[in-house]
Image 1 (cartoon, helix red, strand yellow):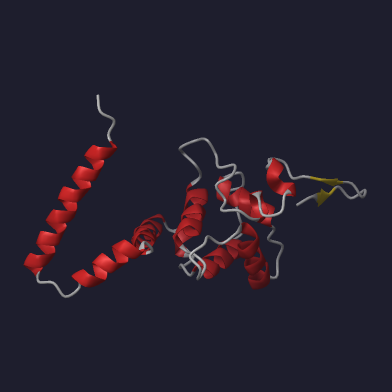
Image 2 (tube, rainbow, N blue to C red):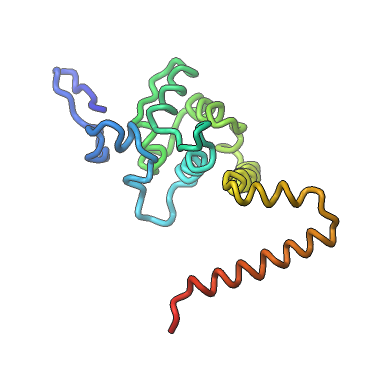
Length: 177
């Protein structure tokens, strides 16, 4: 999304990805994995926003695009909220959004604003989001729902079986020496 310099010339924002001009890629679309910071210590805010994109999905289970979220945030706040700005927040290139922008993101993803502001509450919400992410998998959801009526002993047995299978699967994934 180009910005005007005031003299009729439009320039790309600093740090914007080359895909910015391609519809459906970069800040406007896609799943947001493009251009993530190489550093493992990505901004806490960026990591939290990214976690929302990966966990909270559209009804068809696809990720929301930057364009969809930015549009909803613009409508909620009545303020400027571009796809490029959202991309910058997601990738840690910008890390000081307004309170209203964070509230709009929280509203869109249906999490309390404290998810962004409060470390303790943010960590608790992140755990809940991880559980929701796991339950997105139809097999995991089916197993969990079928386990609801089991006795405590039955649940222990299922848990032990899951542990055995997980160890077996992990051993299969390890390269043989």
